[in-house]
Length: 290
Image (cartoon, rainbow, N blue to C red; front, side, top):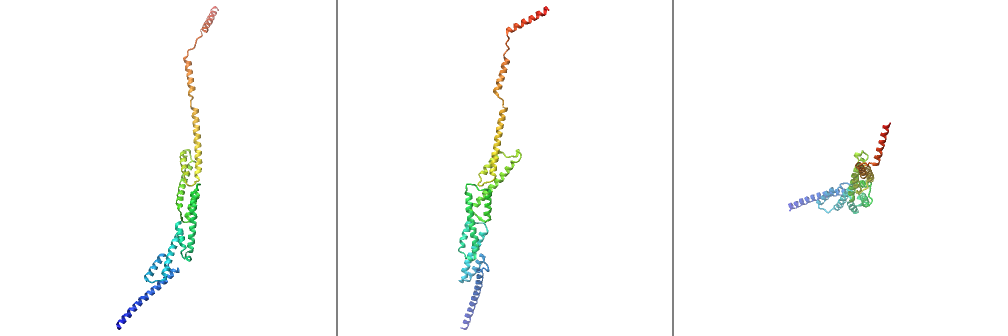
C-alpha cells in the first residue's frame, strides 16, 4: 500500500509539473498576446497568425484568442488599405476597403480610413471628369488631355477611362511630331517641300484624331495655300499655252490665197499692146528723119 501511494504521489507530482509548465507557457503566451494587442509588439499579420497558432496548441479557451483574431482582421485590412493609398489602385478596390473601414476599431485605423476616404473621393471626381470630357462633341485639346493623364497618375488611380485617354494622347503626340516634320519642310527649298497630296493625307489623319491638336489648323491653312498656288499655276500654264498655240484657220486661208495668185496667168490688154506698138514706130520714124 505504501508503494502504491508513493507511485500515485509521483504521478500526481509529474502531472502537477506538466500542469505548472503548461500554466507557465500559457502566462508567457498571454503576455505576448497582450503586447501584440496593445501595439507594443508584433502587429504584422504573419506574426499574429503564428501567435494564434501557439495559442491553439495550448488547448485553452483564452479571451485573448478572440481579440487576436479581431486584431488579425484589422491588420490585414490595414495592410491592404495602406497599399491602396500608396499605390495605383482601382476605384472599386478603394470603395470596398473604405466600406470595410467602418467595421474596424476606429481608434487604430481612423487616420488610414480618412486617407482612404479622401482617395475614394478623388477617384470618383476624376472618373466623372474623364467620362464627361471624353464624351463631349468638342474635342479636348491635346494639352489638357495630357495634363489629365499626368494628374490621375500622380493621384495613383486606376480608372476605366484612363487607359483609353492615355492611348489618345499617344496617338495625338505621334501625329503632332509627324505634322511638325512636314511643316518644317515648308521652309526649305522647293525641291524639299512636301507635295500637296502629302499635306492632304496628313491633314485627313489629324482631323480624325479624338483630340484637338494645335498643328491641325496650321496644316489646314497650308493645304489651302498650297491648293491656291497649284490652281494659280495651272491657270497661268493654260493661259501660256493659249498664247503660243497657232491659229490654224487663218494660216490655211492665207496659204490658199497665195497658191491661187501664183496659179492664175496675167491677162494682156490688146488695145494697150497696139497703142504701144504705134508709139514705138513713131519714135523710130522721127529718129530717121533727123
